[in-house]
Length: 311
Image (cartoon, rainbow, N blue to C red; front, top):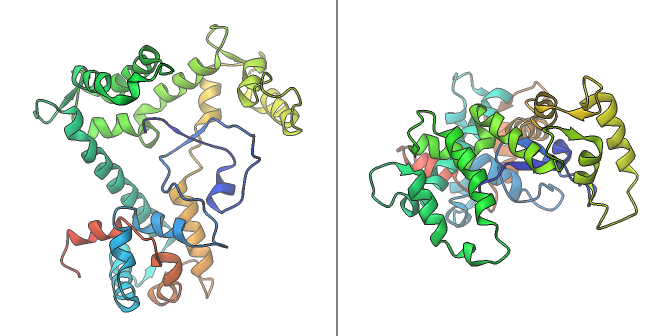
């Protein structure tokens, strides 16, 4: 799905806590590592998908415990890039981000043939547009084709770094997952402003901000947190105190450089498994917590490792 990931109270989500049911947020993070809910009280399925990916879940489920443990040990050896026999939080982050990139690439490959009709190794904007015209979703009377394609053209042009209106695989990944790429930040911010700026003045005023959080047409009784959000807008987000958000202020609001699924999950796995509290994980500590890392419903790691002969 070609859209940024919108999350509210990210770390509450990452660590299994729930957010208020009706609360809406436009904070943009990188593409979600898993569509599963993170709730370790019920299962470790979220951790499995984040640590290993999601393409090989069924195959891994069939492994006997001994083989599962053996393969986890091989993964630990690969994560330990400096060969110091412990896994640091940074090494965990790097591994999880690599799994995420591999999944994004596999997802892109699965769509490539659908759009690269002339099989020249590039997807032109015309090829992409024609394929979308032929997609079944466009037969829906509720689908605003012109509006959606205008938005996607802006993304395509932002991803098309050489400006030839043809995307190679790296450019197409940026188009599909703009939230994962720094050079796509401006277009994501502009999309948000276009959606929220109802009066077309190029800014997001307080009313537009509040209406976007909670549509008064659907519920006249504003929840208590609305007043908190109003105060945050006035006191924190509106830096120059002119009563509205410009592009720079909007960027500071919706782009959260300090929030990362990979960072949160690495910290979570380390905290839960670091028995001696030394800030690192030994292979023994990871194997002792193998249910969290590679229990049932594990994924993508299978393909990532089958490119080598470790197994």
